[in-house]
Length: 444
Image 1: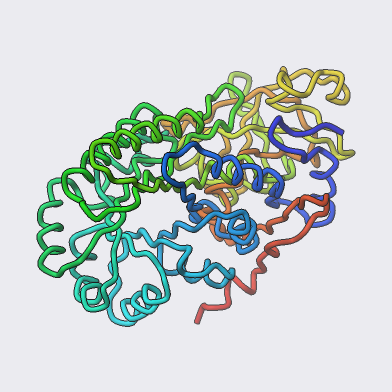
Image 2 (image 1 turned 45 degrees about the vertical axis):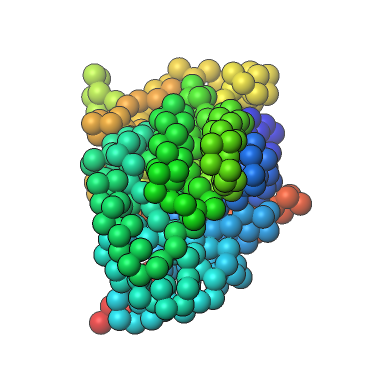
């Protein structure tokens, strides 16, 4: 049996076992790769200390959170409920920062205050949030973090850019003086400054953001002890993509922090918040080919899968690309887009050449239910071995932002189960398949 890619120890035998025992569609995660990515993030060069927070919006499964936290990573939460989920996974509030678009009030504000008293770090992202929490922070001598909207951003698509004029995350530099005046009047101390410019950010713009953020701290924030550069570390899901060089970025940040110390005599701890970087390559969606169609002599070949946009909406949302694998009903790996790297032809059973071109689509009544779309929403055929009905079709790079943001109940399809391929080689269910009764449970 052959490994699916250069990243993982999961092979076609594991895929076949998962499909036979738990059905398809099903998510499959590689625990060893998750651990390895955590260690890599923690080894990033730094000047005066490094904190790594996992952006749990990427994948919020309880077991995943426990694994990542056990490796020494803290948590970046994007909502009150994410804070609660992390807490239910056994992660203490002192290891969690809340960076959210929410502006809690009434019962939610009371809950937020109790979380903060228990150690939660609150990262204010708007003037309204600052005003809402101001009196409480002042009366209880609680230091806050502040998210700055830097005016520069970068992402793999416009919708993943969180730092330019088209996104509203953080307090814009034009509002900074108002925020600082309010904080001075209330005697509120900001001991952390945070920015996040987007998912899959250009490393050059990531570096520019480091320079800008340190400049802002030097000019406006005399009490800051920690600088948080956010996440957005680019992941190469496809063989032709270039991943971020985390060592090189770390060396750049280290140099800039050392220069900052020489100018100001202040040693700043660094934080980063990877999500994709930790989880993306560790996950797969296993589906079954249930039908094959063609739109005429000049049209396209279509593979109809039993899982599409309801298990992975990234192609529909972003035009994102994922690697594809075809595994026969008997468990032979027929094609892999990483074959040139680690899977020589002698290791791909039956030596099937990838001359077949098709578009893999799901079963939803939606033209965008495709796993291969360009940025304008058009289907793009991809080369692969031609599968038969009943063969397995695997979508890679699915550990992050797939199960977490899938429109799972569209057309009343149930939420797919999640499996963990553990370090000891066992397969474990970490979320069961949803039932139709569970979809209907809250209807009146």
